[in-house]
Image (cartoon, rainbow, N blue to C red; front, side, top):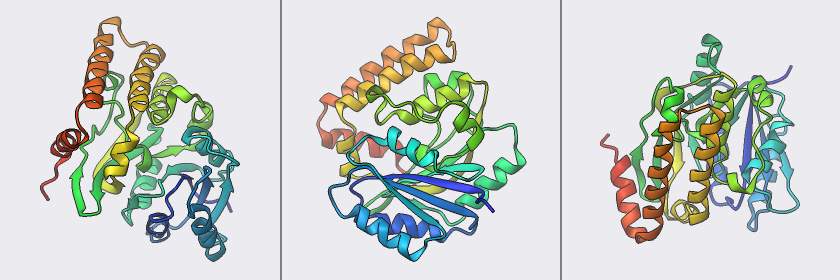
Length: 274
């Protein structure tokens, strides 16, 4: 019998954190799933760590490998086309799942056939512990793309496989690297589907200095580009395009200020008082 869920993971240079991420999957209260990992040309021991888990849990885990670094969009597609599950869940190799994540997301999709996907709030953490939390729009609409892109946490998402295949997975384009998730939401909404968020933090995202360094100038430009092509896909009214200009200004500001100032603003935005 095929699993209900296929978890797709692009793993890259995460040898120090992959065990914690995989353990959080293996400790889920809902166990009817498989995990498909693809190493994207890691330069550390990521592949060896993943291989060790596959040997210990051969019925749960599978491992693929790119010959060279290809990017997350290509890598996730490679996992997607190996997936056997009805639902496709995401996970990153340096994050942690709440033990009830899969059960709650499956329950939601099973009981809400009108939604193509579901995601959740997430907690941000670093080497000092939990420091922030996102808030979500429970039922995002097309107009929410203007001010809340992305409005689904990518790594915490669960999507119906039939919808994933309908939009042909992730678009492989260097202009979409690090914003492939935003482009995916646009594609799904352009097909008339809608998604939802569970207003509960069921996922923990590692957001430290390494994460800050990955938010490069090129990645921020890609974020502006994806808004432009996405607005066209969902037939956004012309007067809403002012939000793209606003985003360009905002992203340029983030690039020119010192990293320490950016981190202070970022942490203030998501600061979480438990």
